[in-house]
Amino acid sequence: MKHFINLKDISPKNLRKIINDAQKRKNLRKKLNHLDVDKDAPLKGKLLIQMFEKSSLRTRLSFYLAIRQLGGSTLTLRPDELHLSKGGESIEDTAKILSNFGDAFMLRTDSDKKLEEFKKHLSIPVINGLSPSSHPTQILSDIFTVEEIKKKPIQKLNIAWIGDCNNVLNSLIAASIKFSFRLKIGCPKKYKPNKNIMDYIQKNNNKIEIYLSPKKAAFNADVLFSDKVISINDKVNKSKKLKSFKKFKIDKKMMSYAKKDCIFLHCLPRGNEVDEKVFSSKQSKVWTQALNRVHVQKSILLYCFGKLR
Image (tube, rainbow, N blue to C red):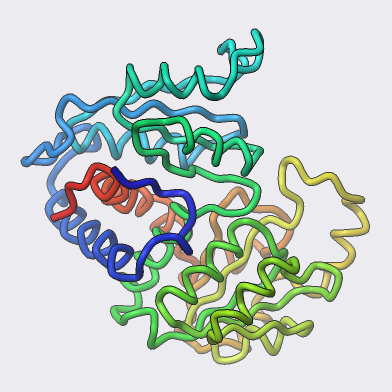
């Protein structure tokens, strides 16, 4: 049994195996419908239980299709329907029930501590569908998308992130260390990665550079990432934060600093951090990026079940 909580805890070899398996499975599904089951049906009879404490569209849909295409099924729970939040039932007791009824548990949570507590008491694999500190399923899928479009291993590409230093970037930083690719981050001084992340960067002697100038971060990039500046549960002065990021908007001028064939990626939902002309351009690959999450999450599930080919 393997968990999928943070990229930094998984070996580069296993991360590469997940990506390779996802590409093989995607290629085999070209003539199949969304609900058609893969011919080998490796997770036939398996139940994935999902719980969302935060809003979700892409993660919810992609995990639903992922387990269905592998031959299994899914049950989605809302925390406000459970004794966990309404009746004061402990995480330990909830975890034991989940382990008895399901075969894997995917949690999208507002608490890293809660995720670790579930891991401690579950006897089935737990997958991090998003937590305050990381979004590993998103970023591994993004690596898959980059390599699929660029037709090169990510180690040979220049990756740029322009925007807020959040959970998605934390996972991209971990991916940079695991896959050994160059990552340039452009963000305002007050919104740089926190001390724990900076210590992690320095300890691993990687290829990550942080710039206060978005132009310098974007220069010569093969791929340019961005994310929403104001997230759903952001407890900050929103107008002040938006003002700080005014010069970090992804527009045509910003894209001109990157390579001519640079692609734009965004995990969605979007805000004012990207201009409509960029978002709707041929350089934007956000829809391919979103759909690819199904294929990678299938292979993540197989990794957790010990069934990667």
